[in-house]
Length: 321
Image 1: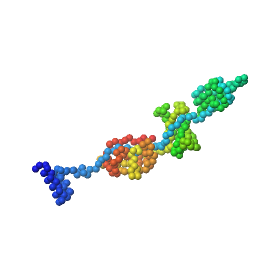
Image 2: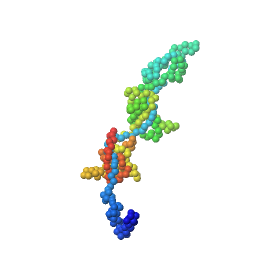
Image 3: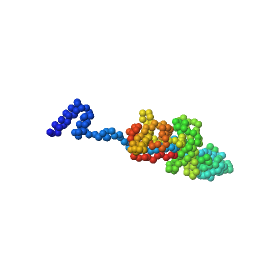
Image 4: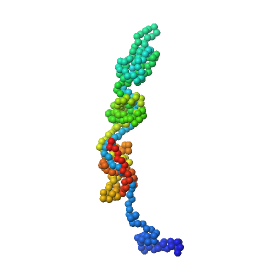
């Protein structure tokens, strides 16, 4: 009997079994003739998902805003001559440290046919000369500044804060400052002044930040990036934000549940959570999860409550600080 006739015979037998015996006899018959044979264990076996996990950590989290600004002197005062005339001598240079009353420049108020004693312009405050527009031979009046002096109030940073962030600004908020001139180094300070008004044209508010600079590394005019710490919480539970699933109006994570008697029966349980601050890939958990609980951080997309999992990697937990 050739193959074609044999195939027709098999089809005929299947039709007869459908009419008289039902589906169970069909499976039995197909198994007997070798056409279909599926082991019962393979049919009932549940899938096992490969996942990465980590531990929830108890520690600190902080929220912040990032701004950029210019380093300015804490206070600056211009030195003016007492009399109009021609500058005959300058006693300081840019960067000179002066005390109050120190000589800045000599002014000769003489005119053709009239000779007067020279007048000496002095520093109105103690500080550092940061600008010196005066030059020998230059004619000046009482309205022309000879020098600009930065007072001893230290350097600060002037920020322009957008209107939508004004509500988060407050005096003495801690700040972290970085500069391109000193890569990898962090300077610390705090908010010292907040303008009571908003600029109508730019819709920004001026904020001043005092910076601690014990080694005098900061210079007036430098560009700075400032991280203002708006909120800091201690002893909270935090996890990687990638572990949180948002689906159908719920926010949840999958927690590992181990069976000590049968380690191969590791499953996950869906846990509804209430998140708090989420920043820099870290999520604060207000409720629904305790510290040191093991959660899935990768491979959770296809999971469901009670799914079997195989933990292939345990990721290092977040730092507590």
